[in-house]
Image (tube, rainbow, N blue to C red; front, side, top):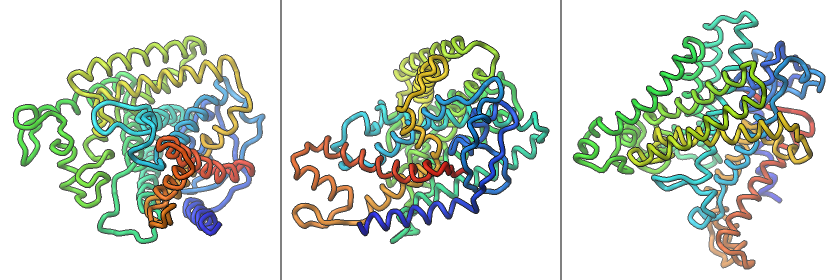
Amino acid sequence: MIYVTVFLRYFEVSCRYLVCRASDTPHAAESSSHYLYPNLEEFFSARYMSTTQPFSVIREVSAEATDRGSFGRLTCLDIFRGLAVAGMIVVDNPGSDDGAYWPIKHAEWNGWTPADFIFPSFLFLVGISIVFSFSNRLRRGDSRKEILLHVVWRSLVLIAIGLLVNASPIVGLDLHTWRFEGVTQRIALCYLAAAGMELWSSRRGQLIGLAACLIGYWAILRFVPVPGYGAPVRDIPFMDPNRNLPAWLDRKLFMGHLYNGNRDPEGIIHTIPAIGTTLIGVLTGHWLRTGKTRAIKAAGMLLVGVVGLAAGLFWDRWFPINKNLWTSSFVLFSGGFALIFLAFLYWLLEIKQWHRAWTMPILVFGMNAITGFVADSLVYGPGYTFTAKGPRGVSLPWHEAAQAHLESFGLSTPNASLVYSLSAMLFCWILLWLLWRKQIFIKI
């Protein structure tokens, strides 16, 4: 029980860090597009923006408010986001790093697993939210400069949150190895870049930007020599794990602060193609805002998604699908998956209107995603830092001790690891449910 108490206390402190004060009088959105997560706040918390506070907690608006406008609220985006948060927690918290089932482990280098689709799905949803946000704010009379300044502020806040999460559990933090790069840091940079494209370019410009990100990144990795190693293909293998330009630059800037010791999956250079992933979401947002029928919208997303999957697999022969380097083939492949999955959810929830009790547990994650991200850090941070006694009395990190105890009950290594992952997800879900039941949603 003492561990549970410590977790709950740490969760409370983290939330207080994110929250300046509570607001009990939310403002209804001013236009129908507002219900499609018009800004990064809605991407994380799926609530409604009408405050200048840097952080706040707001309560659910009335059901009548969501009936306004021609677009209505797209439940499929909440569900997509919620499934991504749940998947993130399961993948981040295995009992055994090596013994977990294949679908919930990231590919070590080239290739892919279902777990690799989670992060690009978040960026894809960010892109969709940008379109609806900016359209709504420009219609209200906000200038592009005002919107950009707001975007810059949010990006800085996201970077700060990422640094805080990287420090989890804070106790015993070594400043000499504190990781600077991370998931929310990359989201912040992609959000900033895609926001600029949305504010000052057309859809044609965004398509050109997407192509430039993908082709330009391939050219950088293929032709630019790596200092100290030589030219790819001629002197070193193409996309060698440690002898590539992104890894070299990350070592040059952040040596000692990298996720994998000498490279980082959220490095500087491979943020370029990640911006491309976000632009796919931006283009999808424009498609969803057209006046076409819902059936045509779903069919369009499905068709382009299939093309994206095929293009990614085709390019994989020369530029392998690789999440660690976020290769251009990975952008097309994961973007294709995101489009197909969103098309399925759109058909299920917006066309067939199959809203049932099954959506509620997922919405708990989807409507408080930034809190879910912080809650996740409260599990994996202590899980890899603090120690406990294993079944043989040996001190082990928490997750390894739990894995050993589960295996001592007769579970196989993959099953024991899965039980631990699902327990971590349940723990985070309970924390978010405590907010859900009071209709409290944290946003930035």
